Image (tube, rainbow, N blue to C red; front, side):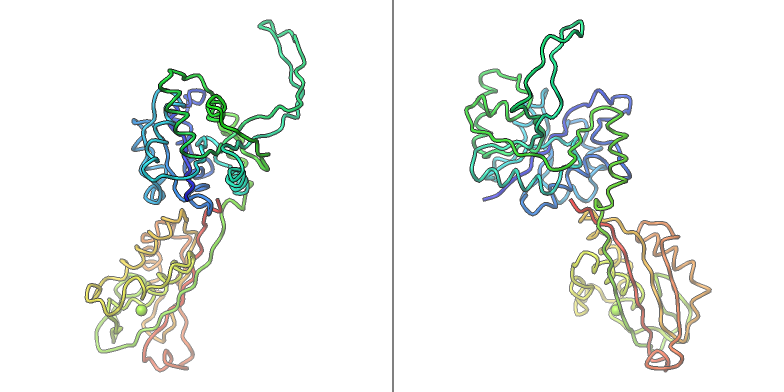
Length: 393
Ligand code: MG
């Protein structure tokens, strides 16, 4: 019993054509419209599968817009001439997974609320279809071609249909296939098609802003909404700590930098105590175990391995969750070697590994006043903190 999300992104968005690319690939406050929309569904506990229908020409933009998020959802399906045809193709692509329910959503609505998605899914327990909608509160006028009002339309019972629109999967697919057979291509949304097929459809009152980006003014409003929505990104902080023992040798690896020293650090890999702590800090932000779990120290594959591999793997895991690394801060505990001559090289190397600016990287060192194992120069320790922003969906 699964619920699939079908996100329709195959339109050309001609009203925003001056932007040079379809609107769903445009950037809103540092994140594409499509990435925001997909993240809302892919990270939602009520949604088991997410599939995007795109235009065949947009494959490269799709990959660039979603990044690692693309690997966490179904491969995209290609749309058709009309929205209706695109939805049908998306449903046909999902059919092999036999979902019980499907939510169809316009990619141009990136601010769909977590609770609204839940409400539509819940409404499907008692009816074959449920549409997120807003009761009309404005007075509605009908005007002629000369803009002269001919009628005030009673607004009682009028709703503005939005998306997501949820349906029994098999019933919606059958309705779409029947419409295609009968040459009907004039339905403006899936609910209209499902109504035509005789399904019972309810409305679910939308609780929040569910802006549909259509015009340049909408895009500007979306930019403001995204910037004013601090909850759109949830900050996560992770911590890492590591210790390695000094043994005979002539250099140590610290923060990915080779530092000449009177000793080496002992370890299965290159024993870069700082990058090990940093790896654990990054994994901590997403609750994804620790370095020893992903790279078992008894696995001969990692003998002498450069520790940047571990950091890079943790960065990949964070990015696959849609996360953005905000900053990292490393403190080394040792009497020697001296860190300050290498500090900026270390910061630069970490900045490169994390893909963020060097101004977001701290590298600090302290002695332990000759106390404890570090003070006796038996080994050294590193503490790392990392902050990641995760989309809250
Ligand atoms: Mg270690």
